[in-house]
Length: 92
Image 1 (tube, helix red, strand yellow):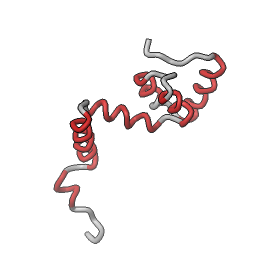
Image 2 (cartoon, one colour):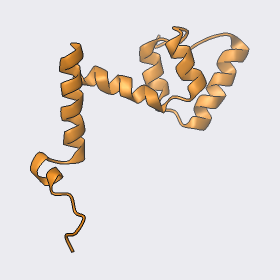
Image 3 (cartoon, helix red, strand yellow):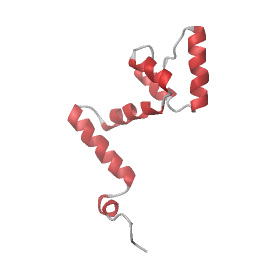
Image 4 (spheres, one colour):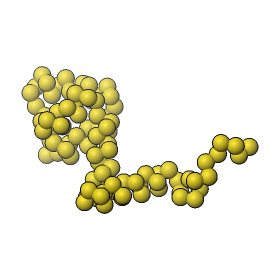
């Protein structure tokens, strides 16, 4: 019954705790907070065209993090609107 079961997670904690420890380690290495590292990771949820806009500076970091919580379909609709209106979202 226990064949193939991971024992290392029981010793170290849940995978979420492992993720938090990893974020903290990366944060310490680059001189930022674990929360900021998590926000950078969150950008991976953006569709590629919006992520490219973030990379090029057309969409600011904080609004991009918020946009990452939209579904893929909602992001696609927003991207089309941003292009047609020649505007980008801001937190204000």
